[in-house]
Image 1 (cartoon, rainbow over the protein chains, first blue to last red):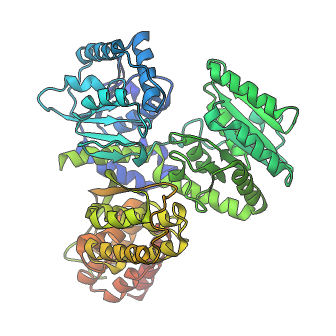
Image 2: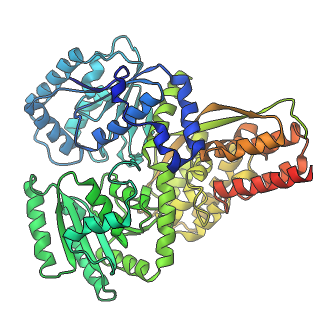
Image 3: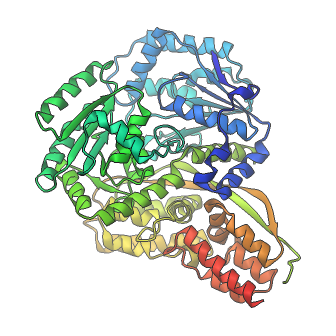
Length: 412
Length: 219
């Protein structure tokens, strides 16, 4: 067990709500502080399975210091697990997303034995205990006599789970006081209250903070991208479900009408065998078109992503399947017009014709891109409204506000 | 300048969305859902959505209308649902009756369409509001104006829009206080008439501040 940040370690206080003042205004900051006032000194505990890497750790890294700044006694514990545990939970993760799963009773034993061990090692006595994702779900076994308020925060899509794995997990989930999902479509039929918390981005993180144009230029130079011509960009790992080949086909249709470039940038191909295969396929499809820039980023390259998004004329997210698709929110925050598939959580972010344009095919994607390239005023309006949508609904501060509201709702 | 006996206390609010277990995949199912869903669900899809999408001032008024347009491609139904103004209602029951009537009439006249599957289902959710005092209050019009300037969108929404359901009157917290405490019914009425569908929350607040500034100058 690792305690990453806790209420007594003031050195962990790395960011303050006041850092967001210029972006959000005094009224918003005052509002969050007012909601937090009745919760001052209350103990809160976040538990997940990794301190670094992955979206959950990224969110907790920002959320926990902000809660500390509001005088909540919050701690963040990371459960311990061996390679065998993470192998099992990876299989569970894929199965919960609907992939095939070959049932093996030892998987459940491994899962339970690590959870039991962590029940003993982690002090789970806070007034509000938030357990993130399936890996530590069985820590509910540590709850004694209905003490505290236990919440299960599920960050993954449970719309088509493997029945065996879900039925195993459901026994634990049903004992929580509430569950949180990222989309109504990801929720399950449960007897406990289920809340909707959208995933969030941090406007001050390297991936989203403002960048000077010169910095964007400098970052783009190695990639040979011409900023004087329209740039269409899709940022996502090289995965067939992100349909990079479909993006190239859409670009080729657009190219018949507009002299533009395409950037396909993503990370993780080197350590993912399938990613490397897809990257090869993408390079083959791009062939010798000098205006298609296939960029393999390091697995963590926030500034490069930021610069590529800011340099883009239009951002594309042509996924065939998607969880929530936070790259869309990242682009919208940068006031970029977005053309994206109507799958997963994307329609929550892209309200068609209001905050971006949705498409259902290669041809549709190409048409929407052409439309925006020839109507820059409409593209600008969508970008502005998209920015407002993110500001109102998908920032880390909204996430904080929702947690405060949930904790307060338990007290009333 | 008149001083109120009872100060205006500014509050903020946070909205929680609870996912229900009710889903509609067709217009006919939406009709059934509208009749059976909770009051908190009607509140969420009409009032709360106005707060969270206030920056859209063209053609977005409630979740039912938006779904009819984007998931079922029925612009005529969307137009009717979108024309409902939450300010005309003093209770969720009345609002539900009209929503249900519009969708029911549509079902009666478009029987072949209303059982077709939508692109995306409609998930009935429920809205819960958790409020907290901001620790600021006003007893004069000047103090009220200063307080108004500093409100977040959430706080402004709470006092100006969702207050209608709390008060069960065709008014809002601001207008009510201005009428009852500062005896300014004309200003209160002008504030109450500000269009919340064609203005963003910031836009509505600007109009309000201009009306107050004019009243301050007049006094």
